[in-house]
Length: 91
Image (cartoon, rainbow, N blue to C red; front, side):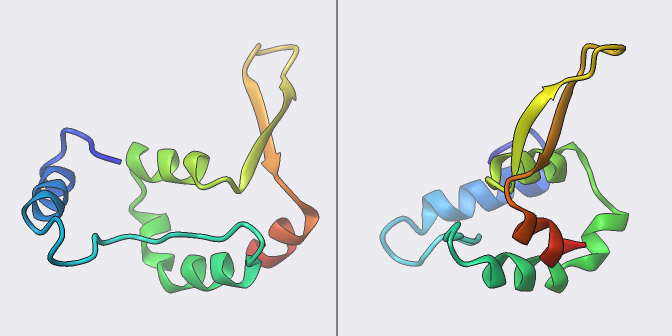
């Protein structure tokens, strides 16, 4: 995900400059391997305290959550973990 923040643009520029030379930074998750999610989540606990809208977007795009409905009072979407196993591992 590329945003207009300096760090994000720098990472994107590095990926473009190294295209075909080096692998891009980041994680590729296999949804069937929940242990991989758990390990990545536990390796970055300091990010939770310093979270930004970019981090929230990463969570939504990760595939860990699914839309479960709409809150009738606020008309806002309600999300939950995709499986009970994901919830158990990350709680």
